[in-house]
View 1 (cartoon, rainbow, N blue to C red):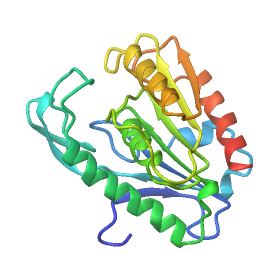
View 2: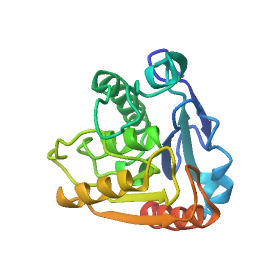
View 3: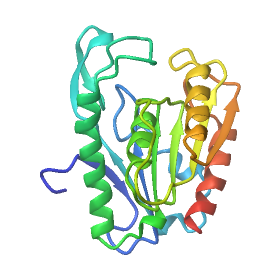
View 4: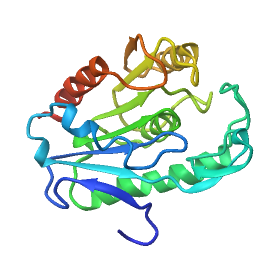
Length: 220
């Protein structure tokens, strides 16, 4: 791993992969968090797919009493509708874009690359993926929300979006995910929305739907 890139857990071929997924974890977790899901997705030819699970930098998080933990940006208030740490978002966005650029430099076609994330990582995936100006295979936001009210008016194609949320989510209320989905629709994004009877987590039905969508988008 190059010194200026985020450290990552990496699965699959180092070079010559047919498709790729960069997956961003949630607040306080790390890149290992979603590694077990790879086998559950049921992707055809999964051994030819490169998965990259970066570790977010460890920073003090205001909402957790200033405790230092892996986070893509500081969270200042429980109300996720406002007061996002946009300086932190910009720093992490640059690091995530560097990982995308690395995959492209190694020969990965953008049409074969998905940017995914859960919770805070999902918010970052939506923020970066829809502003990259690349024909990505797709962007995934699980139990996530919108970071900016600025429309994603950037030159280039608009990747399709998969969003899923728990009806009983106490951390990121369902209404935040629904509002994100509706706003993206207003901006002209193509969003596939799913709701499940769960809290701030993932479930079997969600993983099955996600695996089917990813297989279609990656052409597996």
